[in-house]
Image (cartoon, rainbow, N blue to C red; front, side):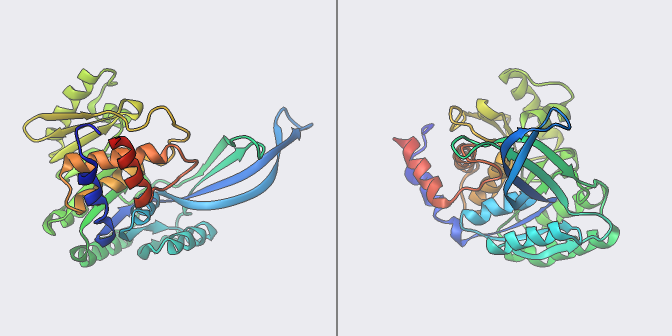
Length: 336
């Protein structure tokens, strides 16, 4: 258990149900079409698949919110969707998970961001992703929508324990809006975590950010290949971005925390031998991490809890979530 007692981690996990987290992010409808291979087409050298079922699951910031809700906390989700069927399907799914959606506003100028994955395979084997089709319009949201999100955040943040910013580059976060969002969280004295795929430097002054290795390399300006390179870059990036903490996630190589005083803490991956699907694992890490911090866990303890949650979710297919019960079992299993 990396010298951490199971009782300590479980103590904080049990507090999750008493917390309320705001999630402000780019919302995505993750659509899964499940089909069985039938035959080769005579029209082209491609498979013909027989449709079996399809479902829409929360993606992007909505997936982070779903993970937090699954762990037992109350979630207030803010974002933008289109005026379309994908938005209706996404909202229905969020409602079923008891996620507050009053902070989700419609933008008639763009469709709801949608990622469609086609999974194929017979019933007796694990279905594999064949192709993914993205329908995403990435441009800044309007001034009116920016103001609606800012006003909602300012009005509701006092009643929340922490806020997570989930940035997929779809237009909510930009040079004008992002500093205001970060300042609102800081002024309210709330923990703020950032999961930003493309523009982490705009989130200067946040409490903690969770870039993966590829994202960290992009920000640093060169590919980080060794642990020594990761550590050198992380120390510089934390200071440059004015973060209290920086967590670089490294897939099977674990994750590395950078703290004040140039302190470095490397955490091995909780599960690197049973990886089935990494889709949405970053959302799980960010969501679990901010929830653990809100529950009062020291940052190093919170990161170990998030690491174990990621180890669970990569065993599942598609954009999956983790429950508090699963997480407690995983803690106890690793303690043994």
